[in-house]
Image (cartoon, rainbow, N blue to C red):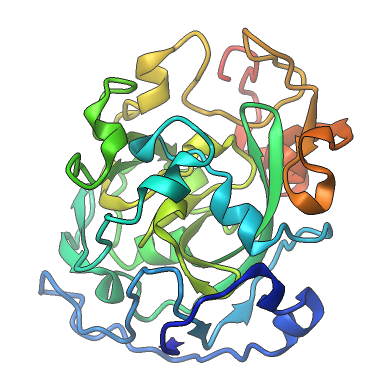
Length: 322
């Protein structure tokens, strides 16, 4: 992966979707040298995480949504990232002091290869993909976002999970000096999340390093975040510093805070309401969709990805396992 120099990217300069998909070329064959037997792999590319470096050598990934993507401005100014505040514009306004470099991620638990890796070492040998995913927030709003990332399953298999690895747990960085929301007791910090190993290794699940062809801005989870498009947005843990493979189901932040409202699975299900509002409909966020006055549309089961993921929950009561 190559990155061009810094530049400001107003929404008016974002490449149109048709041209944007066609101009990318896939760079294959990145070596995974240095991973086995060392705690840090040899970097194959650089990710700086400021949100203003263009990513190159990116292929178009599968499962792309048919709807038009939200603008870069929509995606980077209307966010849930409570580490920077509870308001939707707080992450955009309050994340300027956050430093996403240098960065390392601990890989722990039930795997044959563990240790601490910089992002380049963590992802080296796995090709970047650009995927347009429809993302649904539990507050009944949605966006269509062109993520850039790598399949989490391709990353995990390089660490050779053991048979006891039934779940994957994640943790966000704890830096209250840089993340003012962590100075408030809104949640128990640091933020933690988890998936089953089947969910984590599903081809839809991404470790994202960019959006709209550039590295992730701080407010979107720089430098590394999880994207699970058939689940509610709070499952997409941001600014990840720890990935742990384990036998038991991990605790998750919102389930700890309000277990009656937020379950471990958090699959988008229009038939199961949040205790305080309906999940049957949603509205698309963004200036191109009439903002707060956008027409409400029916919520789709598994956020429209049922054909790909419904088999993961065969025999599971999705009302009890919400």
